[in-house]
Length: 489
Picture 1 (tube, rainbow, N blue to C red):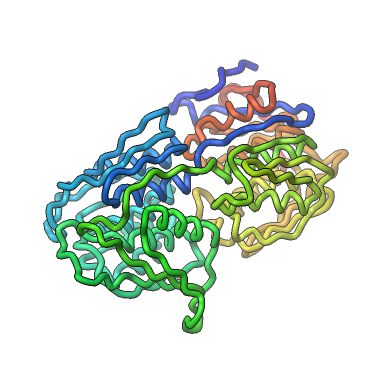
Picture 2 (cartoon, one colour):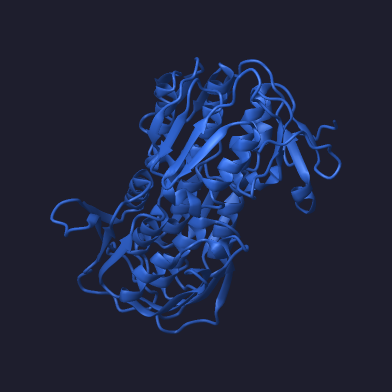
């Protein structure tokens, strides 16, 4: 088979017809530093864009998700300059911004946000607080991803209107706003923690041109019901405080059915500036790191991820704790975490707090002794794809027995002697499907991952970095030309 050079392998026009096959080999040994965290980069971009003064973000991620955020901020008049191949970003909210007054709205700014959940949710909240007239659109899958709970949460305190235009409360989102009024709002926590994070980051923002209040009454945000992915909310609090916001976490004295509340007020800055510009260093992406730790677990190798530790503000470093329960050895240093692969056993684990690593764990579970049960991730059905149903479909092609549950799935590995099968695995244009499923190729031959370029959403260089870590090339080709291996049920 022909091999493509490392890096960006295929053009966009060929993406749907390409595939990559990771070549089986021995234990994976080495170290790696993943790119900057997508979650931290997009949170820092929001806070920096609505801050007084200039901000400098270092260690940032350059990917589709961060690029659409940057392009949207530039389109509404923010100054954003990208250097060092996207790793350094300077951001400023101009003193004479695009919007001269809170209720003097420009012609509608149409913002394309592709399939970036963080961008559409964070901008929906932030722009409704900032004021103006906007329409946020995306790819067809984005117009199927619910945002109605966020829209409903904003409406009671909005000076204006906001609506989700697609059936089921999905984007496009239209905003016609003079900003937020002080008060209290409620949001359901069970679908996406990004709703809550978006509201929290928007709360300090004041409309440009609005009269500066003598005393900032602030905003109280109350979460109703279960809160999924709590570590991402803690991350949001950390980023907001780094940019000077006042955030108080309330866990007592709540009414029945209320899980947690946040009291947030703006800094005493000029109207419209809810944050203070700063230099902010972004950690390597812990979700991306999970693939390399998993490579050690699957292959019986030893992989060190640099730049992350127990002190990381990203909850997904907790993925190594699950690997430890499965039998791996985990070594924590001041600025690195190493996973040493050992014989694997199945586990029963609640992954609500680290739900972006479910697909990674599912592939590790294929090589365990005994079944694995994943719980607490019902909200994964509403991601870039159905990360329960679609994941189950692809794992079955490899010979595994999969049971779907309301809150997750059970994975029974194939029989080691006769149950394994090569397969052509679909990614559903979901970056995490591509990266996680490719790891099955570390032990199995003829596992071909279709549309590998979808990793550009969060990690454009993933397959090149994996190739360097393995020390051997992948196989690349055209889906049109290949002969398909035998498929599973």
